[in-house]
Amino acid sequence: MSHENVATDTSIVRQLAIEAGQRALSDLKHGIRVSYKADAEPVTDTDRAINAFLVTELQRHFPDDLIVSEEAEDDDPIRRATAPRVWFIDPIDGTKEFLAGNGEFSIMIGLCEHGCPSLGVVHQPTTGKTWYATPYGAWLDWQGDCQPLRVSSVNDISAMTLAASRSHRNRYLATAAERLGIHKEIVSGSGGLKIGLLVERRADLFISASTRSKLWDTAGPEAILRAAGGVLTDFQGQPLDYRQPDLHHRAGLVASNGIRHAAIVAQIRDVFPPHR
Image 1 (cartoon, rainbow, N blue to C red):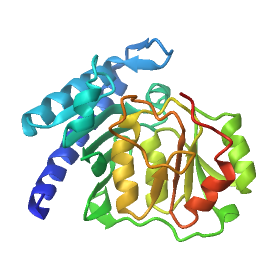
Image 2 (cartoon, rainbow, N blue to C red):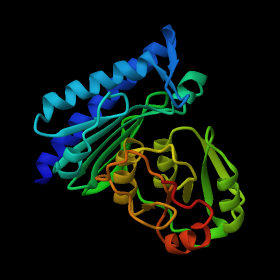
Image 3 (cartoon, rainbow, N blue to C red):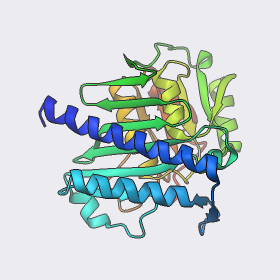
């Protein structure tokens, strides 16, 4: 795809994420209706409304592409494994934080081309921050200023700052941090916001020792992290597979600035073995 076409696509998706964020902020002011999925995860009417809006608009702008979203009823793993372009949508990443009113949620959209994340947008409505990436780089758009993004150059693992989950902390994460000798951390909600911490150089490492993460949780953020020079794998050091039949990342997530990624994985790979 030409640079001009990429820029056009990115502009469209950024605007859609911002419009979705405005809907989320409006609903926060006027009240939120919540129910619970079979796995006990909360879902709001806002999740569903934003999901419908983003799916409709992406289908209108990109009619030949496949769209996979968190609140869709069906998934087509065969088509997903073969489609050249697949959009992944998380209408509200961090629904628990959305409900808590702490602002730590985001709208996330990612495009995978031939199974590889190539375009990503993460928008945080409460701050107005938009992190985005194309194959040509990653940027943060905030308060009218657009700055290029690059991960940190910290190479001492024990000196790294960990971006840790607010809602999904567990013994595996504690063990991994202890193994690595890490004592500094920043707690945040949405996974997209934690990747934002990495590309803003406020953190150096993010670990998710959970099977709850799905393809739409990582497609957009991974595109941004990769474009900023970082690396995202599972606990075994394997690249994430966006063409796999299963929507879940069963072997956890390890994101870093990339400098000592292999050494990090080597120290913690047995902490959270793949769950099939």
